[in-house]
View (spheres, rainbow, N blue to C red):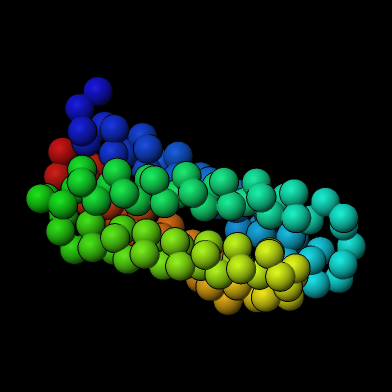
Length: 132
């Protein structure tokens, strides 16, 4: 598999993850705010694993596309910086058991960040396919 095929297949996987993640995060946010489920923090842990995977994806993409698509590589770098900062804030919220902070971070930081990342991913897939 060449780099372009690797970029496309991995990016399509990330795109699908983001499509599934948004409604799952919205449900988790609602549940946390309504104190509905004792397992919310466990589900949050699974979500953070997904954030970490996206962070690793963004790191990989930066090196794979830096030369051919420097602007998009910069967007991946910014995503990596932003998600790392948000994850550190979520850890702080978790250690102080500030569930409302965690829900707010997901609603006002993570979801918009994911929406932007999905747009970036769609753009890089289309650019690579159009230049192949």
